[in-house]
Image (cartoon, rainbow, N blue to C red; front, side, top):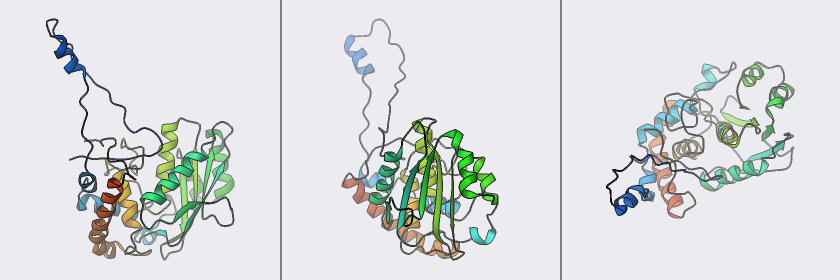
Length: 285
């Protein structure tokens, strides 16, 4: 089964071809035919929309939405859906002395806005209006910045141990009302993109990592480093209007099949209209 993923800020696929040497007597035509890389037909919108089964998407949803990392995670808090209930205004603060990557974050926020239905997210320059703040820092600034902004709470030590981190906070009703994201920008573009995608999207609600999800960026052991179709399904179903903040896993299970069915229809149209590219990197098999 085709397992696509997509990321919008850099070219998706570099093709490497491993070839065996031909025998000396091979005709030039045979050499040319052997040397020509085989071009794979782009998957259809139907193939992309059905790249993952309902069971796979539900499993990913349950593992990432119902769970939390960090010392302040509690059973009660982890047993309910967490999501923003209104507009998400993202303020980007660049503190780096070497790399200004604000434009990449702006582009990714716009990608989320255009491709995830019911996700009212946009960039703002106003500190007063912002309910998500993304700090772009150099590695040397990372721990001091976490300490300065998060303070002495238990989350700070946990966050300092990670390569990049985020903290989403809110009410026990499951409503997220504030998120803070820290992304290191001066350790290469691949590492930056991985941190940007993972931390910003996890701040929307699917906060838990799982080593059982081979096609997800919410797995530190997977090869995924962009915003893929599997994670698109998780975020899209989370922000389906039938999934409410504070909802239990049992209640979510009752509406997830319908939410996934609608997500497939929307994904089909997004690929058909070329808002989401039909191709992409084949996920690990």
